[in-house]
Length: 214
Image (cartoon, rainbow, N blue to C red; front, side, top):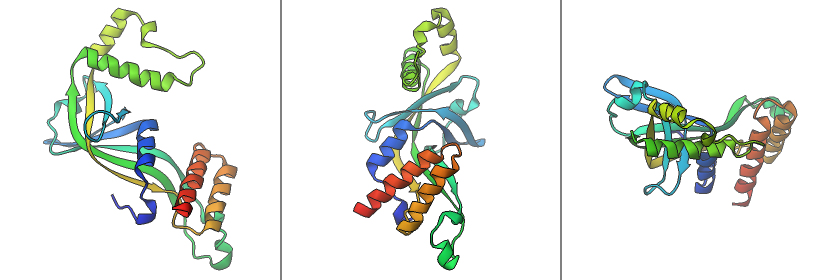
């Protein structure tokens, strides 16, 4: 991944992204070429030397059956947004500005391990479900479903685990802009109100504050 110095996040920020991300792309190189599946993963920092991403996929999905050549990769994405140059204060001064895209992402590499163990898969499902149900007024639990139904569902999936070997991350959040432009980006995002704009605005504010104080 191309990561200019202003866009290099610290380890704490990367761990936060891995902990709070949604679904991500699992990509593997096989004898049949590249294969990819969008999957919800859960980050386990205590597994292995660098942590692991754990998830599951349909048993009918050929990707888990195909031997992986080299490392597998998971592309994790955070909030993102289009940035118009109209928000830059310097536009009025010299017009040497262009549109761009702000985003947070991590390319997570490692060995892909398949778990065809009902107990492992059920534990993963419970952990992932509990995480995403935590904010609900009436959280759903796997125990609410009939046991036989759950058993059939578990037989229809396999567990997957990416044992992390390395991470390349990039948080492109206007850190290469002068402060007046950063303030314009934050104000523009907060005013525009597209889905996710407020989250990107908060990230721009937080990471430019870090850049200023570091």
